[in-house]
Amino acid sequence: MYFLLSNLSLVDICFTSTTIPKMLMNIQTQNKVITYGGCITQLYFFLFFGALDDFLLTLMAYDRFVAICHPLHYTVIMNPRLCGLLLLVCWIMSVLYSLLQSLMVLRLSFCMDLEIPHFF
Image (cartoon, rainbow, N blue to C red; front, side, top):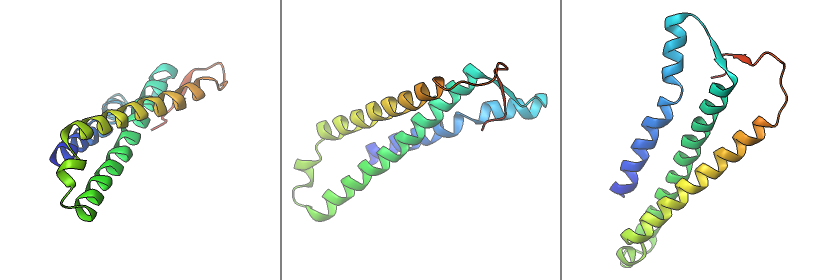
């Protein structure tokens, strides 16, 4: 459980770090414009860490389910190898989900002006 909590806290820090630097720069320069590539990159990482957060919470719920419903078999079922494998699956699913969503946005056609006024 502490292994999953440490990963969740890291993901939460990274999740908030996707939008804060650009927001601080916007406040400092009074310029709320982001380039098309910057928007897609920010969207990718925002979706990636958001999806990873959801998958980790689901994994933690499964961990608690096993601990409550099968307390005597918990150490056998949730061994470190399985926890690492499930965590790896969460990371891979998050990468694939955010990549899919970002690539779908790239297929959309926008105006010729590739500056987007303040997306996040």
